[in-house]
Length: 267
Image (cartoon, rainbow, N blue to C red; front, side, top):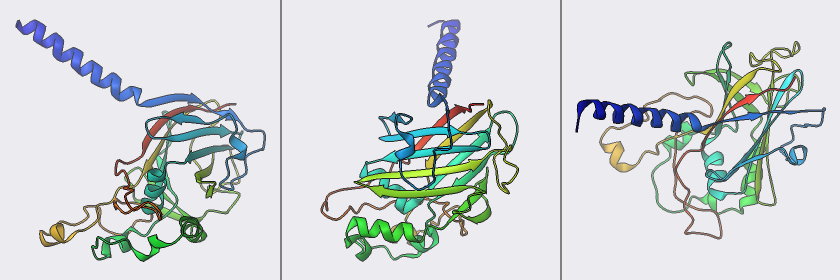
């Protein structure tokens, strides 16, 4: 094969890989909120405004008003629900062309406690509870969220019920998990914490489950530790193969949730 042809094939392969990576970021337009969105963990305010991603089995929606951005995430896939409950979730907000990238971690999980738990193969006692009761206990302690910088370093831990600042709420209704988030924009003069975007601009938004490597006897003996180290609310990695009550053969899909969107805000 001629060298020139080989170079063309290499260039074509590189171009295709770039296009494929770009295509994973979906461009969408926000809906204009007419003061209907209430951060209560219910999807009532999102009828007809959710985009379903068939690969991840997650639906996502975006709305904004002149001062705030709203996000909704829903899924009835048990594997996704287990990941979020065990590992937590990070929503990344990256302003287009200016402003700092920040992450909002919610719900928060104690990954340091998980890392210190002894390895065992039987179903933990807390997972033998009724799933609805277990979820109620889980959300009853989710009263804070963590703001992190682009390096995943925690900056602030704030109350998630402050209507003037970033708010988040999760709920489970009829087997469907719902997550709602409100993030003030830079036009919101009352907010202490905000993302540096304004209506009519674009903002890149990422939705990712945190990842954590559970320590086992084998990697404990070999001296392998969590490379992140330290205690960062909601930041880390984890996996566990036990299932929900009533389905002992259920295994959590350990592939992380990773969705990215470029969202055009409405003015």
